[in-house]
Image 1 (cartoon, rainbow, N blue to C red):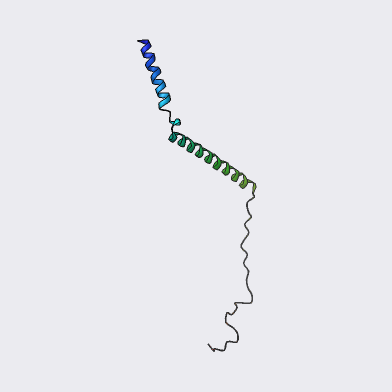
Image 2 (image 1 turned 90 degrees about the horizontal axis):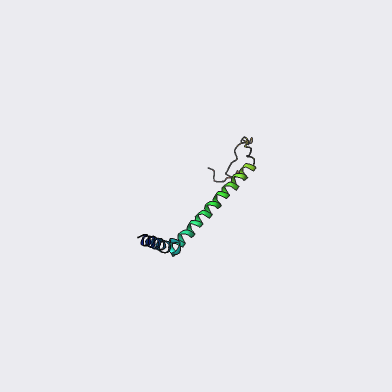
Length: 88
């Protein structure tokens, strides 16, 4: 009885080991490759965000000045010519 139980357990273990391993199939390899790609891109995005935040900390904020208003003291300029012969 013990011998047959051990044989059954061993057969179940071996069948589960060789038949259900998803990494041996083409689909399993594609899924794992995609997971590695996503991890790599996420890590790269995080590093880029850290570099940008470090750069922002180094750049001093721009000083905002008051808007400068320039006034033309001579008045508005005419768009029409001075020697207009149409008489309007």
